[in-house]
Amino acid sequence: MKDFENLRIWKDAQEVALEIYEMFKDIKDYGFRDQIQRAAISISNNIAEGSEYSSDAMMIRYLRISKGSCGEVKNRLYLCPKLGYCSEEKAVELISKCKSLTNAIGAFIAYLANGKK
Image 1 (cartoon, rainbow, N blue to C red):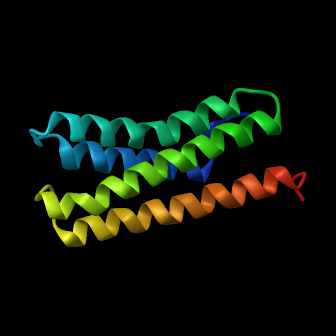
Image 2 (spheres, helix red, strand yellow; image 1 turned 90 degrees about the horizontal axis):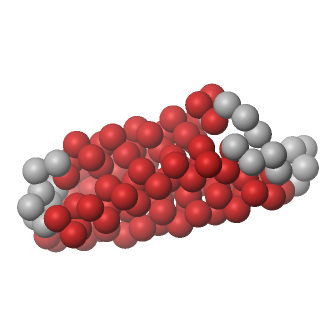
């Protein structure tokens, strides 16, 4: 695997991270803000890191970590409107993006696991 910058999942993960960073830049709950931002950037970081290995097995390992980080972001987004950190609509929009990203990462894992068939 090379050139993670060309992967649609990496580009989508970067977009989610940018939206999360922008959305939480003024939130004073530093623990919540730090954790959701770290989880959001972890999605694309792990895609990039996994691509630097020369084995599909290692890439799959890091893609699974990316999926886990995506799940963490989704979980926190469900809390955001309840805590007053964003509107219900914004949370639903970002949760939908995370679900799409999780599905795309899962499809890429399946593709790699099945020998790129």
